[in-house]
Figure (cartoon, rainbow, N blue to C red):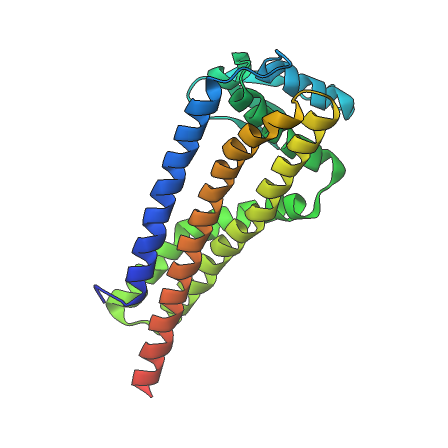
Length: 229
């Protein structure tokens, strides 16, 4: 089936995703030009939060690229892009604090993060196999393969849904800490919200696309089964 009515909604969600990515880039650029009143770099803020939570063993490393910041739960390392690591702007310290939020989640056994880590090996396999099963199932009209493909794809969708509270919680932790420790002044929270809010929107958009795609496959599967009866 080359076209399905759900494709219209998927296309709209895709446009939202593009807009969200643009917002991330735009807000980061805007707030990269606004120095934080604390004068701290992203690396210094990250180190401060880690040390306050007893995570002295977790290093903060600089990595090449732009917006390549992440927390590696396997190596237990916070990796910051050069603009964030060395930057003293609202954008830099916001992103750094967010990534450290994941390290703190890991330390405290935040339920959604633990579940996501445990699911990752299974989801990694399922997301690689699902497209093949769906394609073969569609082409050969093999409903058993199609159903299995939908099952595997649903695991990938569940993984993305679980990612949402993980990301929102990391941002909330970052804002609370920066305010409590005086890393940002109350009037700087607007910039922090802009930077982290735009980033969160990209996860929401990606999840929306995945959920709509899953619904499309389920509808096709249901309609095909009904036509066979």
